[in-house]
Length: 637
Image (cartoon, rainbow, N blue to C red; front, side, top):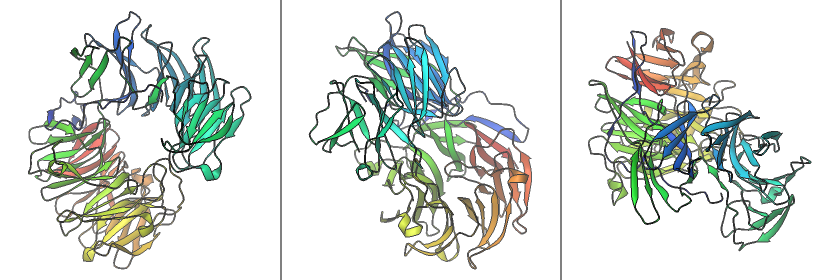
C-alpha cells in the first residue's frame, strides 16, 4: 500500500480507568420514555493524512465516523489545534470510508455509499462529487497520468476520475462471484492496465483494460486461495502480485494484462502512492516532522519535529456518538452496561445518579451476559471470550495478561470471528460462545470454556451442522443447551446452506443429541428464551414467533408477527426477549415494546417507541432499557 503508515490511535486499550463521559443534549420524548443520551459520545477515524494546506501550514485530515456513518472530514491545525469540520456532500446512509487516497496533487479522495468525492486542501472544500455503482471503495490508486482509480465492494465496480478535466467514468462491475468481494489492493502498470487483488472466499488477481474494457482473470482455479490476493506497483512500471501476501511465497509479474510466474525471492521496490484502507495512517510532514498521537477520545494531538521536540494541542469535533451493540444489567443491579463500537468502548450508566463512564474495550462487544460477579463479553474481531470481574479494579497492560481486568480468556478465530451469543450454563462455570467465522469462511463453531479450570473445547461447524453458525442459545432441562443456527456465512463468505435449524447439545459430552429444521424456510433463529415450565420461546428471521417443547422436540405453535408488530430488533447479538419481574417476559420490536402472556403466548403491545430500536435490551428497576441510534433509552413499565 505504497508509503502508507499505520499507527494505533491511543483511544482504547491503554486507558486503565473510567473516563467521565458528557452525553449530548437529551431529546424530549413520550413521558413513559427517557433518553439517557449517547452511550459512547465519540467518533473514530476512517483514515488519516498529514499534509500542508494551501498556505503551507501543517494540518491533519481525518475522516470522521459515528452512528450516522462517515459524516465529515476533520482538519486540525498541527500548531494550534484549531479544527474545521467539512460535512460530506451526500448522505452517508450509515456507510463510511473503507479506502482513501491522498494524491500527488495534494487532494484527498474516497468513495462510499455509492458516492465518489474529492477534497481540495488548498480550497478547503469538497470540489467534486459523483454517484457510482454500489457501494464503497475497498482499494484505490493513482496512475502515471494522475488519474484516480477505485474498485468497490461487493461486485468489483471500477471507477476513474481525471482531476485535470473533471471527467468521471464508471466502468461498472468487472468480476462476478456468488459471494461479496473485498478488493484491498489496486494498481496500474505503465501500459495503462488496471489490476485488482481481491478475496476473501477465493483470492483472485484481475487485469482490466479501460480502453477496450477487456477483463482478464489471471489466477487459475487451482492457484486461488482462501484469503486476500496481494499486489503492488513497482518502480519499473510493472505490477507484482501474490495469491496471498507472503514474503516467502511465490510471486507473479503482471504486465500489459498478462501474468507470469516468477517464483520466490522477489524484492519489492514500491512506487510511492499514499493510499490504504480505513486504517490508513500517513503521519509524516514534508519537513520530517510527524504526528505521534491522534486521540479522538480526549481530543488531543501531538506532533514531533525532526529533532524530537514535541507539540501537543487540543482540538474539537462534533459527534452523535458511536454504534452500541447491545446493553445488559450489571451484576450489582445498579447500572446498565455494554459496548460501543468504533471506537471500541466499554460503558457504564449508573441509573440512580444518572452518570456515565467509559473505558477502552477489548474489541467490539457484540454479546454479553452475567453470572455472579462476572460479566462475559463475546468480542469482535477474533471471536474473543472476555471476562470482567466487577469486584476487582480495572487494570490494563499488566506485565501478566492474566492480571488484566477485563481480560481475554480465549480467541476463537477463525472458527468464530464475529460472536453472536454468549451463555453461562447453570453449573456456574461453563461459558458457551457461538457465532460466525472469519472473513471468507462458511460455518462457525461453538466454544465451551470452564472458568474454574480454564479448560476449553472449541467445536467446528462439522461438529454441529456443516456450513451453519450458532445465532442463539438458551439453557434447557437436564443441563442441556438449545441452539439456533443461521445460514449466513462469515463476512464476505459463500453461503452454502439453505435452511437453519434448532439443535440440542450436551455441554458435558460436547455432542449434538438432536437437530432439525423445525420451521420451514427459516434462515436464522434470531433469539431464544426458556420459560419456567421448560418450553422455549423463539423468534426466527425476526418475524416468526414460536413456542418449542424440547421434551417432545416439537413446535407447539408459531405465527408470523411481522404484520402486526413489525420486525424484532436485530444487530449482531439480538436481545429480543427481556425477562422482567417474576414471570414477566417482554419483547423488543423495531418500533414497539410488547409483553408476552406466558400462558397463552399472546403478544400485547405496551407502547410504540418514539424512535426505532436499534438494539436490545435489559430490565432494571422497573424500566426496560434499549438502544436507539447511539442513545440509551428506557421505558417505564
